[in-house]
Amino acid sequence: MTLLDAAETATSDPWSAVVGQPQAVAALTAAVSSPVHAYLLVGPRGSGKRAAAGAFAGELMAAADRRTGSDPARSARHRRLAARQEHPDVFVLSPAGPSLRREEEVSQLIVEASRTPVEGSRKVLVVDRFHTATPAAAAALLKPVEEPAGSVVWVLLAEQVLPEHITIASRCTRVDFGPVPDTEIARVLVSEGLVAADRAPLVAAAAAGNLHRARVLATDERVAARREAWWKVPDRLDGSGAAVALLVAELRAMIDDAGGALTERHRSDIVALDQREEHFGVRGSGRSVIEAQHKREHRQFRTDEIRFGLATLGARYRDEITSMPGEGAAANRRAAAAMRAVDRLRATAESLIRSPNEALALQALLLDLPPLGDSLSGR
Image 1 (cartoon, rainbow, N blue to C red):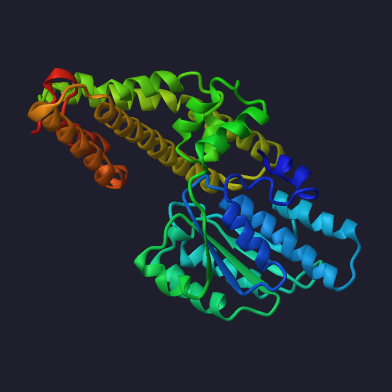
Image 2 (cartoon, rainbow, N blue to C red):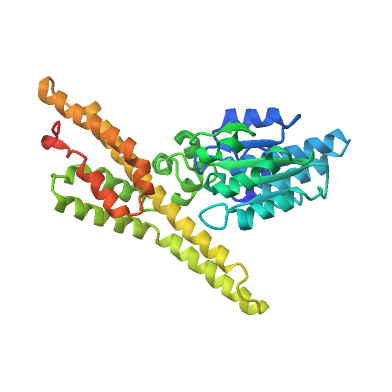
């Protein structure tokens, strides 16, 4: 769903763009009538935090107007503009680079927090990807978040709360978001006409709770092939470094190929930027911001693909446990080996994703996994 799509449904159902998060929606809805100064929305990427922040901002604006006797049309306008991220009193900041930095972005937030609302009595500041804030940025934001002007409500969005952010998190009301359930993702994909009903479960599973990724994958005809490649990895393990090296090379090439559509879209962005600069005679108009965003999107894409692969491997080993025939010591050893593989995958997933050397990290992981089939043992 695009921002425009969200805006079209915002007036009738402000929370329709927030999928599969009934508890979070209930908490935010209850907060509208008497909001506190700051909220922290915590959950994985693609779980609907950004859409929820927009809906919450629109409801805060509409509620403030209702208390002054404003007409319903004005409330509808608040909701529509907030959903589009076009409301003059809703400021949304997404870090341009890999982290939220004090020098550029926090200074901008502090200035915005000091400004008087334009259209009403409320101002909402949404900070996306707060989990990337440097220690200096978090420290600089502490006082503005802790002691805002009476008209200001802060909404921080984070995938997790890091130790260096605990202090500022303690000043906020926390609202948790979980991965969007596969059934909900499949329902949305079918209702939006993005995939056929028989293909929706595959795409939903590949998205791993990320609705944004699910919409991207809806037009990716190679999802099934990539899942099959990861599924067959345990069949090709033989304990040798040569087999692992070949597998890792193939998997990384497959991820590179899957990112081709994203690369083409980025090229189109740069071409459009070149044309705008040529037309208006202005150079450097947001180029660094766009290039930083492209790098971030590429990193996120690879992270999502690796998570998809590791989840598929985990499902394969769990399937092996439930379908393993036979009894006795040998069967028990095979089941124990498969269980250890699932535990290894779960324990190493995040460290693998954060590793600066993707190839070496994948090789180390695959060398530690047991093969499947007759060769599965309790090593």
